[in-house]
Image (cartoon, rainbow, N blue to C red; front, side):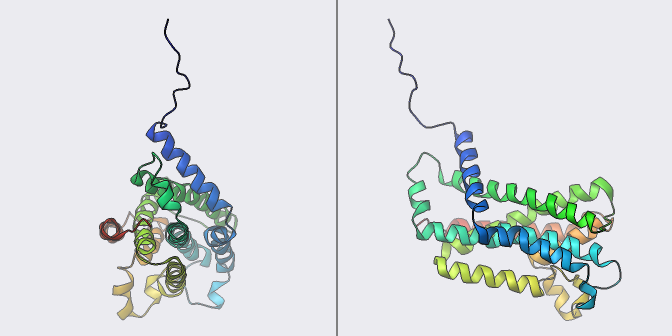
Length: 257
């Protein structure tokens, strides 16, 4: 006669733990009004206001909605993978959430994968909603399905670069400082980071610097592919370098408590 020890208590399979962590991170983010404001409300308002942008800012030749839409998509990626992630992680460190999660069977890298997975889920909703609203407003992207595939490639690279920078910031500074710096960087890049205004509208002396920023590389790359051009190598290289350098720095400096 054999004994039945069901339900056999123990750690769940690693994949199930990471998936559960991803869903929990997503639910927490969706319940946060400030995060929703950054992730969806502000990009939507800028997209709608962008149809009248030429009355305020010189966007150059072309239809305003065709120029502003790739910039708004880049802004949405910036808001969710940098600003929101940095602020959330910073306060989780302050309240000891990350420290306590470190005592669970979920490995530390699994916690980070869960956070990145949550960001990707939110971005999928952002990009779908923003593209549909832009099309409703009259956006006419070129390049067909290839342009959308290129958008996904640039979005993943942009997410890697911005998320690494967010974790670098949140892992090194106090929560209040992370909040201040993340919001300041968001505003500075929104105003002067070649996100909404095309790079060629900036002074020539500033263009060489701005195209090396992850915000400039991502937004200009999106404009190029939705104008019917090929995936720009320069944007890919800039984003890969930012992602690699920031990831290495984060691995060496991140403090879990």
